[in-house]
Length: 254
Image 1 (tube, rainbow, N blue to C red):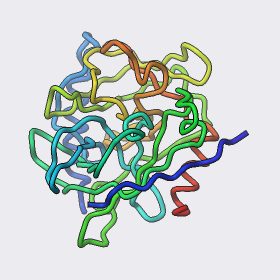
Image 2: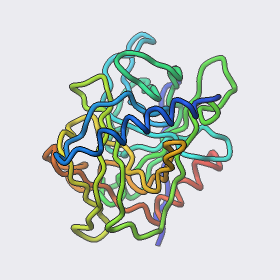
Image 3: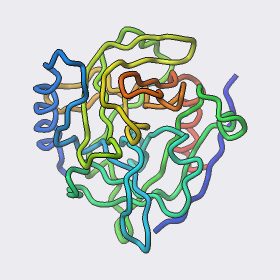
Image 4: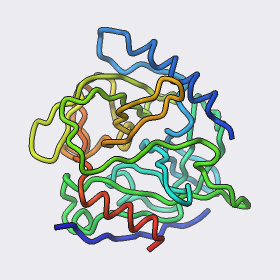
């Protein structure tokens, strides 16, 4: 059965294809390493960092997130544990790299989590969808950064994925590529070093197009052990019917 969805309100406070391709090429060069450690790179437009804010200014980035394709182009996906207890205004900065904000700062105006997560924080429901906007603009984020496809309900054990995240200790994203495992029911495992605090919410990207650097989100760092207690092993909840329902609710604006 599909769980019900809870929407949480938080305080509101064109061309990127060339940049996507450039970032993807840089990422692929790093992925050739046999060390299986995440490597810093310049990032991609549709993946960014979540920040706390103070007096209208960015404070500290604390989690990662990615833009997902939607009819209105204003949705972002991350881990539910990243935003459930967040206070004040949260901002999303796509493509964040060494202090630069090439695609602007976007305010999180609504958070959608499954009711099952809201009631018990079940790791199998550790997914959140965020609505974002920019003050004074009606242009949706997807028109600025492009977007990843969201795929739910498809078995992805043994899938080759690229995982991007923003460690708290760095102002650059890291990337790594490896094959997924399914260590337990409804959880995926990705093994690669350097995925420390802050990378939670970062996307598991499958079917990445070499020409654009865009792919399909089939997971986000989270789930079991809130994404993993060691930097070498990361987890994601399997994106099933509950996430499909969550996305449907977010699209409807409920």
